[in-house]
Image (cartoon, rainbow, N blue to C red):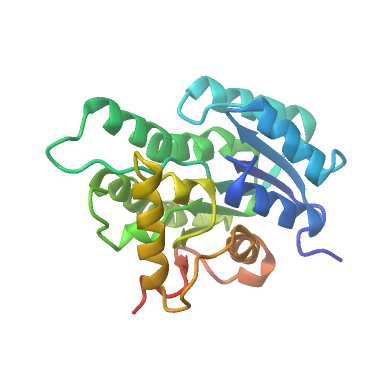
Length: 250
């Protein structure tokens, strides 16, 4: 018996990194999973690795409303219901105050905030009572990394969403929680800055700042998401769960 037997899950940004690792975890625990990404080639590779029996891929851009409506229609046609949403897709980047451009601001908020809002809202009619929603934020919700005011603001917005939505959806027993990773060994970590050298220096610095003295792995975050998605966390809603090697806790 898997922890998610018979459940239907939806993961944005599910073709790589934390999203992909979570899709693997969900499928291994008995769920049927819909994953989205803006890159169909990456989605095809994800299916090859996970298997076609328990997964549907959808090419979609979370910053576009049409993409969310398309996802809604596909899920409604294929399964007609949802039990789990993991709003995982997001951008990371840095730009110091004094140099912030309108384009950078719009890109970050369109994906990280608008994208998460409509990821949830557009499929809300398909969610079963007692469902679980997990939002992927960051330790930036409570930390102040240099040149990261816009990125941090977008992640703090997700923490606020989780609090408010947990109340908005309580009559349907839908739980809403935030997962906040620290430095995780994904492409996002190694491309945080505009040059490879800066990104590597940042990754090394943040790694040494963790209590455990290492970066985390995507599957370690995925196991925490699985906890929040399953009945193991049936009395938990509105929280922020840090998976960060202790960096934001000490």
